[in-house]
Image (cartoon, rainbow, N blue to C red; front, top):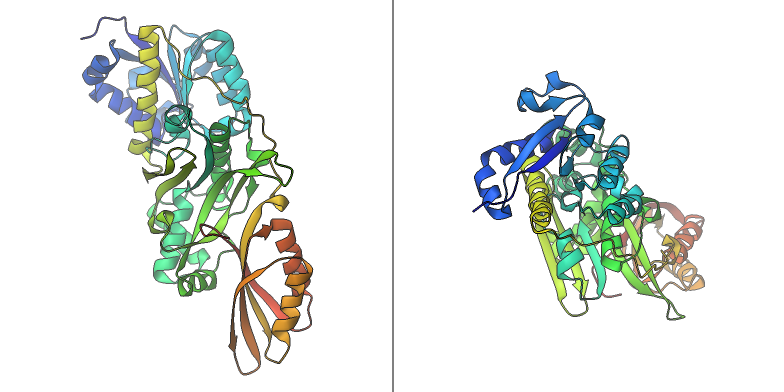
Length: 433
């Protein structure tokens, strides 16, 4: 039964996600009204080129996004992406007391605190479930369901394009370049895949996850970022031999220093994980996030990480929550950044390495290489050596050490006369150190 006056909604953008949001609002209007206690009325859709949006309700299209935001609406849904004009438009909405639903991970990772402050000042809501991992309910559990727990680690696959590419490389044995080309042809990669394959997209999402999990403001610039362009077919094959698989991981950790002080470590990079780890079986364009908390233990969130309909599902979930708050006169959760933990530099992060070397096939090579590891106080966990007619392959897997120590070790090894080439270097995650 609906008793409230209509909740008026303005939408900024009408691309793949926006088109689905508009469709679902129209097709599910009766159910949504019943769930909220008031009907939802989409009053306008701001786009740059109306003639490009033939599937959208033509009578709702406008090119004047500022006027739409300033009109008599209750909620602004933003699905245009990017920093500007989205930032200015959402700040205008929030300062006017209009609640915001956004899928804009880049904006939140760079200017989240500014948006949260504007929402607090006016009493408006800001919801952003669709900004990370598409349809997967992840941010709300971190903000609400686990609000009484102490989260220690969040590790996951949060970019479908890179996961598709790495999964295809593993299945076919193909190299990175040809697999990326195939992913583009099939629509799994954008025409310009830089944000995905170079890790920018995952870094923005990692910043949001770390901010929520550890009650600390983390921006994209705080996140150590490496993409997948340097991952080779040989790296994938080496992982297979060791019963591991390669994934681009977003890793957010609460860490404690030798002085007992806590800090946050946030990084995005390719890594080998054991085939038995829950994230190892996540294939194709799917996303999955593994959360560890003191009381709840280990939790896994899995599902469609992108796409029009899946992401629109998350947008509508937020819209329902915001609309219910409007009807009931309540407010959603505020920003929680009370912990103010420092962000630890990547060099101080504790990691493990898988290092593949091309070396001379003669006595004493292993001892020279091992001496460099000892010099930098990096412990070796395993070694595999294979001889060839004129040279040899040497693979070293380390125990955990600081990333700075491991990088210095690799740099020193590269200069040894007995080392022809450092073939590959990859971090190892998901195992005891």
